[in-house]
Length: 230
Image 1 (cartoon, one colour):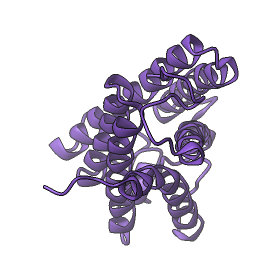
Image 2: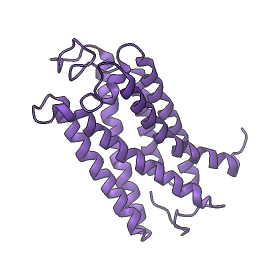
Image 3: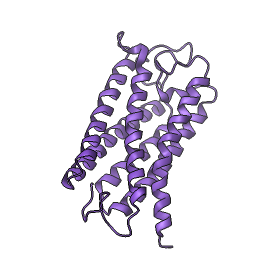
């Protein structure tokens, strides 16, 4: 097996820079162009339903594969386990979300109810369970990296990581309540979910950029110290 070169490591980290913006731009464009789809109301996963749904399914899978590559780059750059593993599980969850489509919710596609009384298929159940697992491990990754940054006295990044984990959790929990057809929130469930997604992807993208900028020759922290944040 060929040994990875520094250029290979750089490309793996670059995948982390590309994954989030590509995923977000793709679902924003789809949401703007899809007839009867309301980005403020409907979840991103609903874009995988109906005509053209394959585009969002591919979007999930591509983002997941890029994230898995980034996780491998993290592992080689930081020489620790838990942070990269959690990022990798997030990527695997995205792939699962693309392979298994969700049930209709909040009236999309047109003619469907706001909420089905039970899962319409095993595919939908798998989509939700895999997505939930991905959300949980992304939050866990934020806090694992926060602890590492705090140990290395990188308090700005530690605080940002904690804020990202907390903000993602709050926004996604609100979106979940909205998709449950809460009268006060249902009209903006898609917006709350998009806020959560933006928070999570922004954190991962900036983490990748941070590591790309330093590109160490050996195992050092993002701050250039002997230890590292995860």
